[in-house]
View (tube, rainbow, N blue to C red):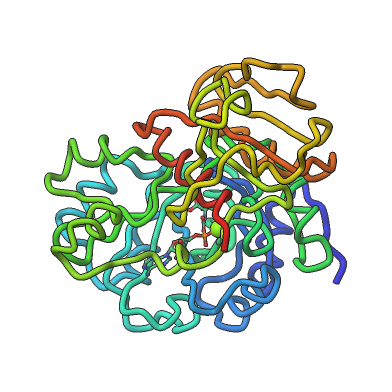
Length: 344
Ligand code: TXA
Ligand code: MG
């Protein structure tokens, strides 16, 4: 299949492809999405095929108005209304009771459906022109870092999708926050661009899925997607607790499965293929081939995935990510870094 590259002035063409059951990648404020008609089961199956996505991982429906929500969700509860008023359009995805006519493929057979209203003007206009809500997972091959530029979409999906709308690099660089409001207490399943704190300031007793797991007080809930490999560049990813990483064997790295790896196990052993990203420089800069110092946690979040991809293109074998405090955007950022560093 030939993939057309469209400009943001060619949304009529993009909408026509969607209406014909095709697939179009487009920018949102979080990451690029791979869109298809959310009411067309055949189009939905093309998305899973293009990404190599496991069929048990449901998709997010992207809407431009409340009519779109009511086509897919059974009801809008008071909590849903509160969150929509506060954060829509924007990077918050609500898991809601599923409406009767929603395709099984979209929800991976669950009784719930995930919905968000993006705030990116190109995304909103594309949905309106298509005249139907769009399913849109992140526009990357399954398991890879999400695409934050159209070039990254092209790298992963060229020849596998009908078109790419070539907009600017995305504003947040990490995906939306996913919150399940179908059960009590409401539960953040995926940390993202909207922080847990800002949600908790509006809806009391919202918890995060890690808290539920550790309290074991409510039956475990999971975002199905979190079972799968995610965000992984080809290079090995490790987490540095401090800028003195690599100078001391005390510098243990904790990875997502709870085990620890010491710096002595650095698989490359050669400085020529080591890259660093963080909020400050590592203490021995001569040990690093590439050093990327970000201005703020927000900046770090915005560039992380494109940095991973660039390091792969440059053949780096090891990427070390400096830890940031687990608050605000830092929580989502550390979640992505931990998953990128997970060893199976
Ligand atoms: O920012 C975003 O959300 C981007 C842009 C393109 O909008 N989209 C995105 O989609 O990240 P995707 O497919 O890569 O991630 C969707 C996440 C997965 O973790 C999936 O398991 C979860 O949402 N999800 C979808 N439907 C769900 C449901 N009914 N219940 C629980 N989790 C659900
Ligand atoms: Mg994704």
